[in-house]
Image (cartoon, rainbow, N blue to C red; front, side):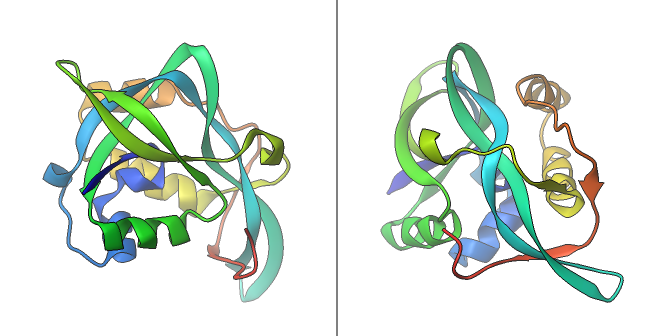
Length: 173
């Protein structure tokens, strides 16, 4: 068994459940803090955006972690099996899985998380309204303090939100 630290869409039990094909509830996710990192909009990949009976290919930005020894960010821990981590690796393919220590207040737990390699980070792209909505919806299941810390430790997006449903390009990595 492994621990995964989620800090974006992996905060959503529903979203993770679709990937690992196991029903999860909020109780399966344990809030924690990651020291030495900040949440940034630097993970980019190609998507197809479907809106108003049209579709177009776009480069979209997603949440990522960036190293910064003076920062911390919150997220949640989830315990997963060998098979489930393989499924998460496939889902998180633009990211690289790294080992981190997550602070749970009374103890520190080693966990994996996903982060884009420094050389591949980008700020070029759009921000998807549906992705931001998924995160905002997931955050409603966390405490008010968790939500406040989340937004305080997340870089503001500097672009307008683009509406529509999106799908990832299969060939994107």
